[in-house]
Figure 1 (cartoon, helix red, strand yellow):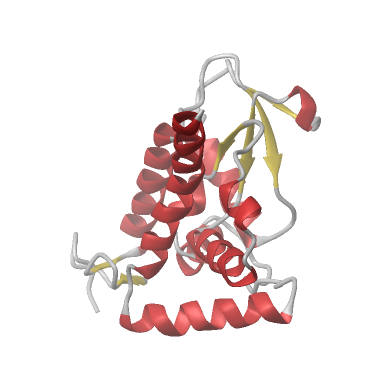
Figure 2 (cartoon, rainbow, N blue to C red):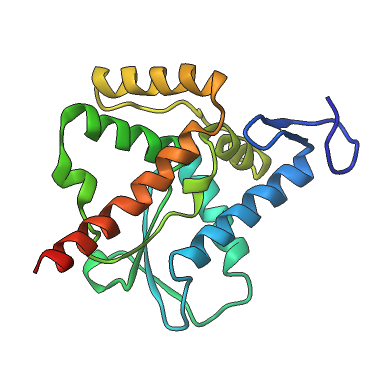
Length: 196
């Protein structure tokens, strides 16, 4: 398969968008999506103190690479290891993580978790990028480790397997779940304020 943008060999097929991308265009596409998501969530202001939630996973590697691209040349942003002193929290959650989390909470009947509003500004740049593309991006930027995920429970593994199977026939399902996940806390607050 050839890249929809330049005709070189494709390394990623985005069924949800109807395109195939070579490594250069796939990396650029991931960066563009992530930057757009950061802007949508309020951006990274001058003087921002960022706390990075991550570890030694492919997602964390992709996030640190992405932040170096987003923040290139900026000296007005600092990082902290103390979440209490941070002005914003940055996570390596992928699109799959967000969609699976929503489905898990729905299936558990955990409305409080679904409607929880973060205490601090939270940026999830990779939340608009499927896990397979995040893994590609990490490998494209030198990651040589394992890209498999460590599910916390058999229940969550079942949800992930269901979503993967369902998404094979409905490629945009995870994006629809993310939109709902993004909207729920604000809708809940709006209802609460309206009721008062």
